Length: 223
Image (cartoon, rainbow, N blue to C red; front, side):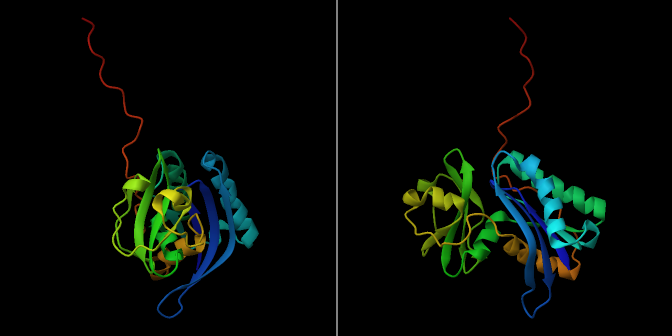
């Protein structure tokens, strides 16, 4: 089965076409084409052309796809919405199921063995973070200041762009794994659902914060 992976929860604008197939206990994933551009201000401009590009690079058409996989965050509001709206629109247009993957889970799955802190940049001098043990989540995704994270015992390393940005504050060695969610890891996390024909996910964004912009309140009468 061919799946399209899209993610815009971090400054990395990611699109990829992956082939997934059953392979014993864990599905096998092959990345046929991927485009990753790091630009925190260009999600809206670059994601759709990246999708078209990876389809062309892989030698496939949108009609060849069997599912869409989207990163659901956590991430900043504007960028994250671009990826989820794009994924939902493609899935609806092509009558395909769409499956959501936590961005931190994808980084955790790629972080290697041991207990690892995964952190992405949340801006405002904060990080989105979670802890993984051999790729399995130990904590739920959260947001906080790097110096104030309450980590469980045994965390020996850190991964992700947020961990790199605040390496000195966190005091943990970096794993050397990707700073941004690898498309292969995202596809692998959704492969079981895709291959089994599971119902589509609602693609609910994982914001972890209230929006900065709020509707204006009612005007107070002049005294």
